[in-house]
Image (cartoon, rainbow, N blue to C red; front, side):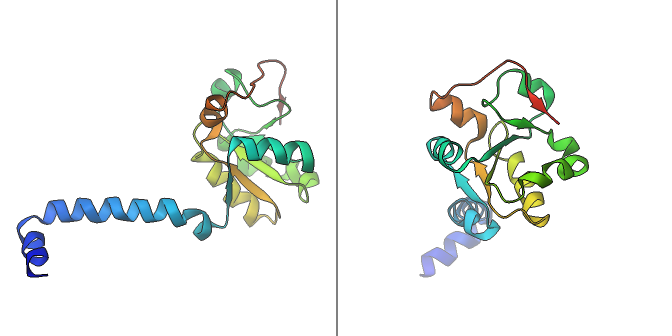
Length: 146
């Protein structure tokens, strides 16, 4: 035990880095439970869309969205999300799965949806990148932008 304290005293930078990495690992493991937002893998997402009539909501910017989007997804860029959240009111009781490029920005949209009383909100874990990696199809035709 003395050696640990001696190491910390001699290498505070390394100890700080270790603490930071451990904190990130714990957040990664417990973040879903802390935030209350359930993250879905692409395969789970397809099941929810096909069996529970889930709404797929894409919050990427227009240039990202134009490169390909999940079929039948609704597009509301995160930068306009607060102003346009009212357009989702009719979907309040449906499951809503939010996606972005990697899964980070969609978490912000999920929190706003929950704050506005949406009951079943999910985040596509890994975003469109995970969707592509799972070899699931993307569309490039006419979109359902709001």
